[in-house]
Length: 64
Image (cartoon, rainbow, N blue to C red; front, top):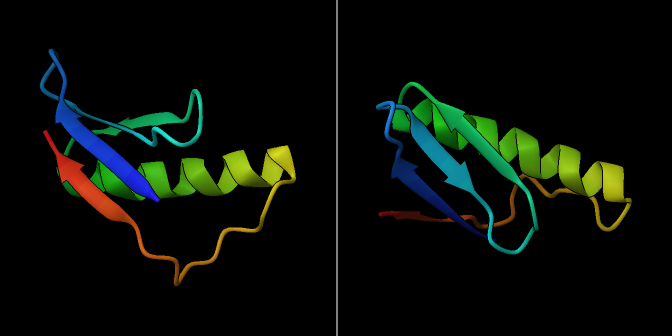
């Protein structure tokens, strides 16, 4: 699954997963944003009851 991390206007890092509509998160650092978006993806998939999140699934990080 691809995630995109960008620096926001308020100097926080904003992350989203294009494959999951509305799945966004943020963090004060790039690392925190990545951790938060991973959690958001897991919760998104859990709430949608689609597929269970596999911690070993490869995530491709794109920093814009």
